Image (tube, rainbow, N blue to C red; front, top):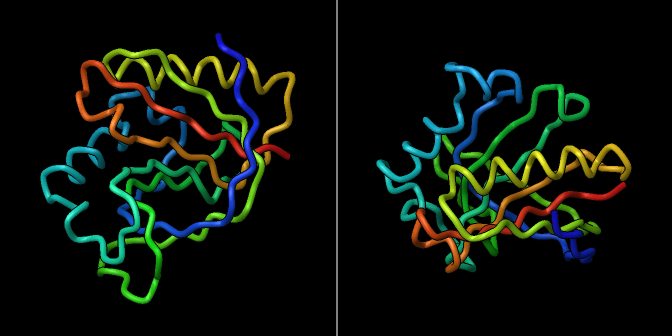
Length: 158
């Protein structure tokens, strides 16, 4: 595992579609995250989000009940410059200014690299303090090809 980069990020806003889930559910047949990704692409949610300020997709983890064992809200969306218009059935998020540990996946199939890197993060977090405020995965131009993608995962530090 590569050591994460520590970065400070200014506050920003995002809009997307979301589900409430937990990691135990996501490792079973009841996992909701794959269905949410299907909905995001089938319904072309990215084209319905107003006021986009970047062509990047975010997967945001928020509303943590406790730690990685509790429930959380998983939102797939995009960063926006305004929350003036929030489409029906979408959620808005304000991500506070925060210091993050940024983990960059290896290049490979998205379904493998993201899960692998989360396993590294769970091991890393045994020795490091996570804030459990809002964490997110950043899918930019490096993730256009889902079979040869690279993703950054931002973990909020306490």
